[in-house]
Length: 135
Image 1 (cartoon, rainbow, N blue to C red):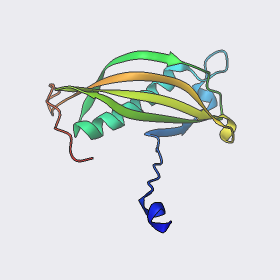
Image 2 (image 1 turned 60 degrees about the vertical axis):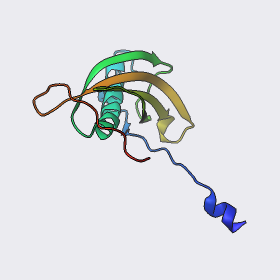
Image 3 (image 1 turned 45 degrees about the vertical axis):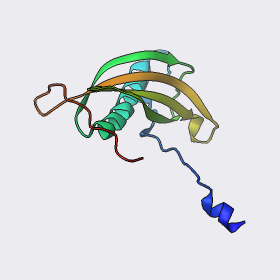
Image 4 (image 1 turned 180 degrees about the vertical axis):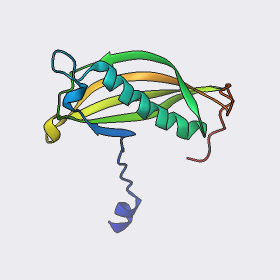
């Protein structure tokens, strides 16, 4: 039994970005402004893209953005990001945003989108992505 337990792997998915929705981030209807949420998602995707690219990246496209539910003041906002495509100089990152309502509720998926980043050299020109290292 102990051997089976030792071989079991527990994977805990950590958000690339986690923050608290504040009153200053609201739109006229009192919900969190979609642009604020989009910027959090871009930061999350950019962090993951930077790590995979081994350096500077820039956002070149946002595709298939979908808002599922509003975000409210007091929600804990968590953005999860995964590389889903790697090209020669660019990569695509899928970002999902989940909230915990008023910091105690059940997590709710509020939005998702696909962000494309290009790797840049020190002069701001496109550069090839490094090959993937060991898992």
